[in-house]
Image (cartoon, rainbow, N blue to C red; front, side, top):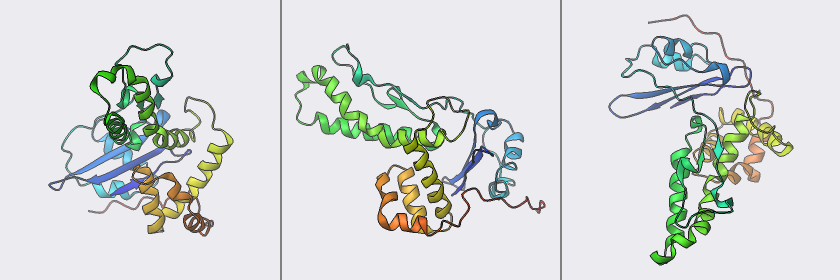
Length: 238
């Protein structure tokens, strides 16, 4: 797979992942006014503006199987139903209806599944007749499922000045600087790459990036630039 990440001065990125039967899924990302086009050949041309030519080189000779599909509803929104003063018995909200994320992080289905798992555990042994009256408590049990994904999505989106929302606090700014170092190291260190993608995919707790061994690996690569210059595009070759 391939992941070309954007940055604040060049908020364009792309992802390429393999599917079955020799097919690949290409996703382009753009922040603010840099939204990717949803028509060919503009879609392919957009890949030429990324920081690295690697994604363009990978797909330029590919055969498009569908028209590109755009997603413009990219806000992070968390509706805290567990805080409602008044609510009807039997109301329980999960999935995107409770908390939705910028889809570029791919967290929505994982968070929904994690909330469903928490709900399943909470319902174990609870008589059916009591469930409607217990929905407020059950709602609180599902809230924690979104915590990590929310922190990742909002702290990263707040790097961009046009993101609507409260400015990042000091803790978030420190986390952003550290994560810039993590990502710089992950480009050259398989161990850091594994830890980073484990946290990004929500399969590993965020604390994995703060263990003494991981912190030392990150700090040992302090000379690596966090926003390296990309090489110029090579001439097009068949």
